[in-house]
Amino acid sequence: MDLLERAPIELKSWLLNWLGSFGVPEWILAVLSAVTVIGTVIGVFLGLFALASVLERKILARAQNRYGPNRVGPFGLFQPVADGIKMITKEDLVPRAADRVVHFLAPVVMMVPALMVLAILPYGRDMVPAELDAGILYFFAVGAGTEVAVFMAGWASNNKYSVLGAMRAIAQMISYEIPLVIAAIITAMISGSLSPSAIVAAQGGFAFGFLPQWFALTPWGFTACLLFYIGALAESNRSPFDLPEGESELVAGHLTEYSGFKYATFFMAEYVGMFAVCGMLVTLFLGGWQAPLPFLAIVPTWCWFLGKICFVAFTMIWVRATLPRLRIDHLLAFAWKFLLPMSFAAFFSAACWHYAGRGPLAWLLSLAIVAIPYLILGASFSDRFSVSRRTYQFSE
Amino acid sequence: MIREFLKTCCADPSKFLGDWFVLLPATVLLLAAAASVVMRNLIHAALCLTLSFIALGIVFIALGAEFVGFVQLLVYVGAVAMIIVFAILLTRPEQLARSGSALSGFGPAGGAAVGFLALAVLLGFIFSSPLAKKPLPPPASAPVAAIGEALMGDHVVALIAIGVLLTASLVGAAVIAMEDKP
Image (cartoon, rainbow over all chains, first blue to last red):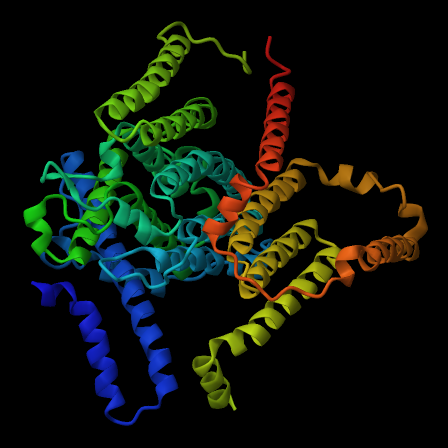
């Protein structure tokens, strides 16, 4: 089992040793070592993307009581191949009035942060491509590039739907980034480090011999995990926060004027970004690569990490099948009036939990600090949004 | 030649980082900053400014100030650049054309004169300050934990003061935005 656990690392060092035996110079090996890691990570995530693109349609179809893709290959599993061929052979249209350079650069700029954030995720024990002191900060700093890309795409298309979609997307991303970052900072505060591997290590061990000490299993951690999850849905423009691409009002938002491979690049970047943010959620709150029960620790850690990512991604698809799309003012009000105060409450709750000694008393105290604001905020919202005759504020 | 270059950078990364990793983004930074001033199209200028923010972040990281570099990217690319873009999109082009700055009558020569005057004043203060006479301290890498301890220890008053200031501005913004409520 230990062999399987270390398999990726051993395979890499075996490959490098094998090449070294042919007298390949040291510096080529150093470059190759980096390239193998980068290639593996990108390969795994592109594989996940291909899998997700078909499974998402399958799951949505199941939720809507229909079949979904089932013509290409067994159970429609080769659908991504067919999609890929279709996308590449499609004509690449650029509107005449578009800003050609920016229009071309937008999908490229979109792809770069999506791939770069993968560098700091701990994929398993001793498996971090780039061990950074400020890994979490890196994740959000690089992720900021996505907003620029969305804006470039929307503006360069020279289409009103594109600009409106891009502006919605940016407003949404900026609003939801605040609760997202605060939720992440809480875990950094409790584990005393901004490094993802240190945060995973802080969630190791089992209470009473069987209960994992993941942050999501404490009152403040549960709140912060839900806040991060909602923020992650909004950041990756997924339903119910997919109004930048709301097809009933904006055609396809900033993607309206993209076709062929450029569209596929956007699509790919969005899915890889979704998996990256799922990986961050798993790292911060769900114990990273740690096994959920002691006797399950025989399964390799990287399997646990990938499994947890897939589970979180599955719940995102499930949410998409369940919830209707929000309206833009509801969306922003939800971020500023509910998520932001709740994230402060979770922050305070985590601090109290830490200083009250992390025992049962601390647990109750922290639960109270999270639950009371939740009930108050919830009550205030249900009062305002009670069922009544609709009054139109802006149109008569 | 490329082989030699790669050889040095793999054998001694610090040598490589010391030179090219700073010079290259610094060049991009200067070019992008110049372009953002010269460009006629406002959006292109804003995008060039964003590029210069990114290059500045990379310069910080290459110089060993990891934390400052990431914060530079997070704050300037993620927030400031987006606010600039929003401001441009929400203003009508004719408004932009009509509004001239106070110095617009002086033309490029006046602008250059003001710029050089400001530069001269800044340089004068920089070189006359006592800090300029001190010998350079050895380059220190600042781990994030050390920055956190310094902020929470020696500089905690400044940190709290900035917190109060930001809260005040946030409340102010909320009050201004709330104006049209009945």
